[in-house]
Length: 472
Image (cartoon, rainbow, N blue to C red; front, side, top):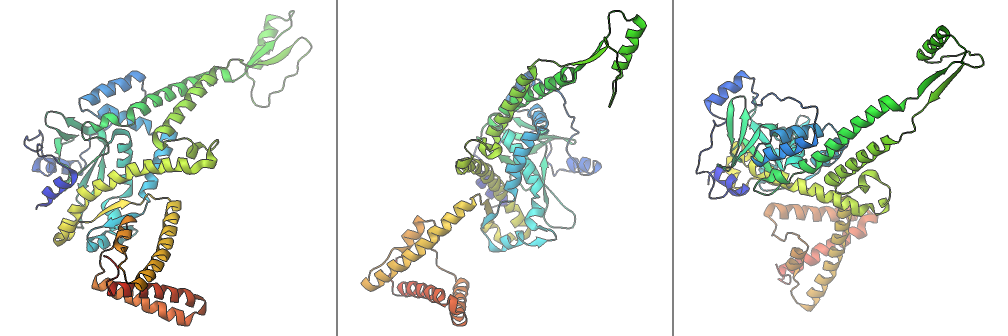
């Protein structure tokens, strides 16, 4: 089976796709390669930043997205990232996700190569830079869509993952495919072909319509407008007005002179006035700013609900004593992002890395998942295994005395523990560990009792296996 066919299976490509050739030139064609070299390798078109947004613009972007055009939606998402609350929430969620430990499976050789340190980073980090993955995860938060390109690198046999701005993405409904508008023209996207990695976190059909960009966009436009109105109020009404009071009999010249003195009021200004002359400060009694503050607070809380699932873990306050519940919600949302991201990299990137570096291991190409369990979950799991080990020891001894088989394999499956037989190499390591336990028992009297107990457990289990009293 070819690597392209295997990738198509892993990403779930249907039997109806691929019969119609989409428009444009492939990214590896000579036309695209030549134009790309003229631009120093950059395919992305120049992007302009839109500074002002209205609520009707969000509806216009939604209508454009109905046709598969994500350019205006992507510009809106870029504008929202300038908001400190949204930026902070995404940094906490997706930035933290990049630092989660990875649980690997598949070829051991390829795993060791991916985890090998090459300078300050591992090979996996050089292949898939954390910042590129995080930016893609941010895109997926808003749009349920993200795109990376595997770009060849000079002097090494594997490429680097490079995130592409979704503003250039366009979904062609008649062809059921994605294209990228580039400096070299239209380039069709073929996920899993060794050059493109397309990350979809929503439903298979029109996933962008179910992203966070629409509700978050409306809230952000409201917040931005209210912030501008609040600033306008502050500039005009927040500062007290200065009033120069002149006596009724003062001449026009004296009044104007006194007015000029008050008008030039600066830092540490001192006035010496006679009876009848006075200087006052008049402050606005308006409370219109409270309405702006209320709207801004509502929008910030809406962002927290959308990106963190709750308020307590962000703001503290009422309910913080039950923080475990809210932390669970936050971890569930992290898992919702971590699982599809790991699946995309494992199915569209790592098989090609294996094909380039270890062609003979392609059928056992490695994959990974992010370990999103909380420390409290790990502690509880360790306690379960400790209790399980003690219980098995007792039950195995009873089974050995009664001469019956004990279904260890069934219990292992219930707790999700692998019960596959050890390889000769693993058996050798187990025997070496048992020997070390015995030496430790002799050299350290304090640990001797624990070591003897461990040896007793291993002996009981080994004897039961040898005599066939434990069901596999």
